[in-house]
Image (cartoon, rainbow, N blue to C red; front, side, top):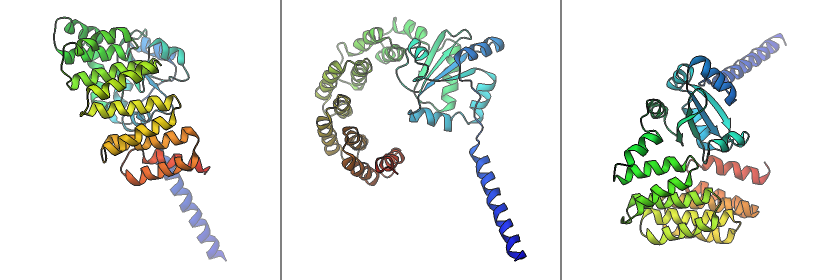
Length: 318
């Protein structure tokens, strides 16, 4: 009996030690930040540092990826400890600040002075080395909107026009963005830069909730860029626009057409996951579960497999 009790105690202690080890393993050191912009300004003023505002949302997968893979690196910890103050702001909570900075996508990282005046921004995900270099260049006046504008005004470089237009776009300045995107399209053949500019114009319409204009623009891209990657991208966004308008049957028809036309390619992968999403949004639970399961079967290496499996469990009430 005593031997059995001793063995039981030993097993319990062993399990507890494993649990403690697992807990320690989950506690990963991340770069420091605050969650209040006003507090960030106080710290920045005290330390004579610039501020980086990380605008994120709870559903943004690229935001989570940046937190998990970049904010835990030695470079990030050193940079955000010694060089800048980071303020992490949930854009769907602090909507006033997000609107003030014209945030249109996530993640968006806005570099400001210690007093909160914007210097420039990064829209989207970057590896930490490129992230730090870009922000450091901005502090030196390299690559900022004003610097690019000065160069563009004395240049005929269409790629420079695109860089400038993109900067205006992600600041929410659609009017100036459109001026420079149109300069790219003016008198040019339907090359890849024209395709990118056309997609960007349609995207601005979509983000500004001008769905009819966006739909017309995407359909025109399908025609103008037939036989190129932009034809498929235009088709995909035609489907997305139908889906957002709750025209689920039309969306499903477009997505199915993409799957047929682009078999085995990333556009078919995108279309298939949105077929499942369309059935889910339509309220057809059985079809949604089947569609998500088919996606996992057909694209086992996709980054969306975990999302698809999670949706299946949720739809089943598990």
